[in-house]
Structure formats: C-alpha cells, structure tokens
Length: 160
Image 1 (cartoon, rainbow, N blue to C red):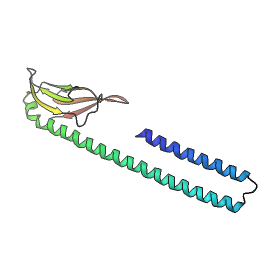
Image 2 (image 1 turned 90 degrees about the horizontal axis):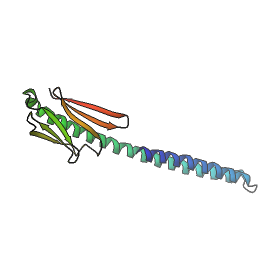
Image 3 (image 1 turned 60 degrees about the vertical axis):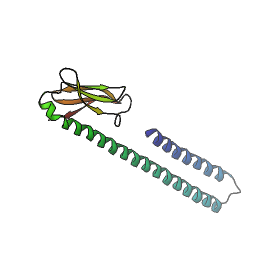
Image 4 (image 1 turned 135 degrees about the vertical axis):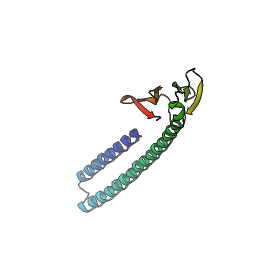
C-alpha cells in the first residue's frame, strides 16, 4: 500500500513539474498576451487541484480499506484469544504441555504431556505465509513469535 502512496506522490510532483514547464514555455512566446497566459494558468491550476483532490480521495479510500483489514485481523486474533481462554481450565489442570504451529496447514496444535493433540486453532484466517516464526506454550501462556520488518516480535496470550 505504501508503494501506491509513493507513486501517487510522484505523480503529483511530476504533474506540478510539467505544469511549471508549460507555463515557462508559454511565457517565452512573444505572441502570448498576459490575459491568455493568466487564463491558461487558472485552467491548469484548477486541473492540478482537481487531480490532487482525486489522489487524496484515493489515499483516503486506501486508508479506510487498510483500517477495515486491521479491524478484521484484530477480531480474528480476539477469536484465538477466546479459544485460549476456553482452554484455561485444561491449562490450570496442567493438561496442556505444549503448543505447536504447523506451517503447512496453518494450525496451532495444543498437546498434552503424552504429545496427543487435545485442541487446535485454525490460524489460516489471520496468518500470511511466513508471518509466524514459532508458537510455544510457556508458563501457562501461548507465545506466538511473529516475523516482522523490525525482527522477531513475540505476542503473549495469557490463559489465566
């Protein structure tokens, strides 16, 4: 999305540069009178303003789309948190011994001390390939370590 915004900003700069060049070219011609030049400047200024408004609307729409996506992702993560809360009773009874993330089916598996799966969380709705580095069960908490541009970032979901 930031690539699209950068392109839009470049379009504005290029448009303004072209407008400046056109004005300069018009001024050099002796047969162009000042009234015609002012009229053309007004027309081009209006076109530039209209284009800037269009680009601003596009940026706002992209921002709204991204905000909706973030809200959707937050809701899905809340669902995982709810699932972990549902497992709290089992956790408090030490039934959960491990949590494992399977990248191929994008599922978090909760396992007992014997390695038997006792519950799962489908992470497909909130995970993009490569986002999760690891998942582990530590001190009665689910720890999801994310791959981010800033490095590995853990998120801890407390089951108590």
